[in-house]
Image (cartoon, each protein chain N blue to C red):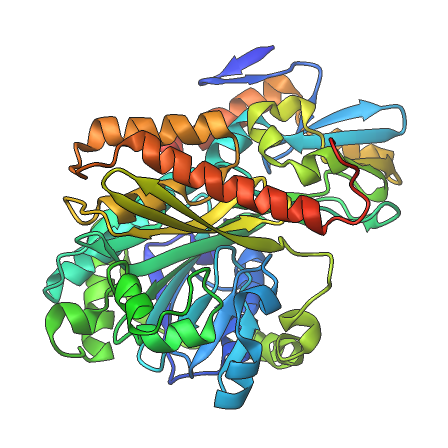
Length: 375
Length: 137
């Protein structure tokens, strides 16, 4: 850790809305500058012009409705961090932290770092009247509905942690911009997604000023980390690197990338009839069918508390496709949760998810031209 | 096998400060993530490695791994040329979490053999890691 980074103050960078390419280029530039020890620990706020952002290893064509974005002038870009695709509306707000991995008080274990920084954000959100809570591993929620997501990466002895806050989120627009493994059922699909996602506007009844949100976040982080935050600017070295790297982040090479460098995905659906109603599972799996990237569970059953289904979905996100492990996770979840779903038991959810996996595997076998029967 | 904290580290291996183990085999090395590296990273979901024939530079990033929403780096412990890539763990990266010392990422032919002297032996690792682990208490 350089002497620049060995103090208790963070430089705060803030700017008017930038394009997705500009922000992605700045992410790389600041990460690199920090890893070289030429800039101090930094906190940066991000406001975007409307855009769709995919994770580092995602395939744009599978995740984003490219023709729609092109028609609407919505930029598409690729993050330097992982995770899923995001739609950023004009009022959404992000913040990110660049610091040394060895910064006292910040855990080395990624899961613990997420917890600490998410809880700092939660403290900030409470200051503006939002009853937010940390949802392991890397989300922030209000009563089971996601209001912020996080991600991060590292370079040498530095890391960046990123947080995206939903301020005045347009779910309907998100469903047009992103390719979500959910049937386009108009209002029904929007309603279903509204049960999983919320925004500051929905929680407060008005759209808070960005300046108010930023002060609240800084205040929460100050309390969590015991650090001070002071306004700063990009250095000349960063500005120079930014000018050099921006064209790459605007290029198709970066945004659409090489064909073989991504985790490709397949979508599948299962309808399972349980005594208490239909369970419909819509999943996105990696194309080797080894991992549940994420899933959406809907149906005509009644669940109490309502958030139980959202929590089950969160639990199963990024789960390897190992049927014994999936069964164990679901059974344990319902043993602990004490949920009430009349006519539906844990085994029904297990069966519904297995049916979806089997459907995906059958479809893949049929699509493979050289696979012999019985293999 | 040496124990540091809750984690095991084979004594015959070398280690770097990116929580990677390195096994020397003649003028080549194999390397992967240590048990502690796996612990702090989380479940590895995706691994991207360079192609055979690629050049590596000591301590520079030569690949990436994704665990949930975290993208970690794979760092070349030495300079040289990639002679083999472990496709079995590229296609099934969850193996890294189950058996980190059997999950080698790639084989590199050394171009600067003296770089091995910069790596830590088990005694040096014990001292360095004890300090590192204090951050997660």
